[in-house]
Length: 209
Image (tube, rainbow, N blue to C red; front, side):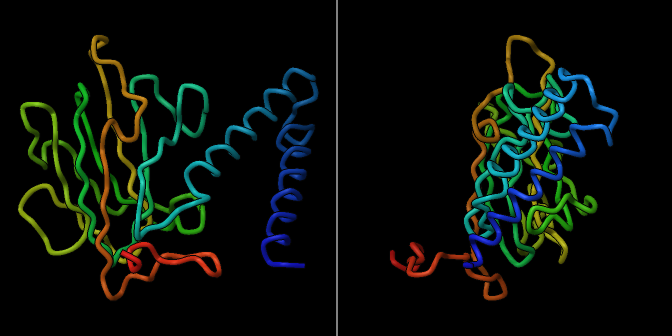
């Protein structure tokens, strides 16, 4: 059996156990409606994992929504949008974005979240008082690399993911559904940063170009 086939079988087996236990008598769910809602939560968490973790690459990170109006996960908030992306402590990343009407924007560095694990803690933070915002709401920050006076956030040795939060109060400026309310990230690989994980026979497009 191939490694990928074994991993796929393990996923299915885990879902079977989770479905029986989390949406069953072990958690006090016996009513058919409660069971259905429990299984719905399981599917939302699975969808979140596939969307935010399955094609991760810290060498080419992309901010993706942790929760959406159609997918619940963790402590969602109707007045906020949460996005995250993988990072490597040896990398340097430039993030460009916009406030998009938000009254508060922050970046937090999460530790111990490798391979889909839940973060073990927060090891750094930067909010909109620490970076310059243009008249049009645009901003640029740097994650990792040499220290800067403003708009910079260190990536400690255990850094693994970046979470971005946009909070809104003005009903005339509804939260954006797009990626990080327009934020984009670009990573610069350092010698200590491992190369992207590629399937057998695939080419590294950064090398090809």
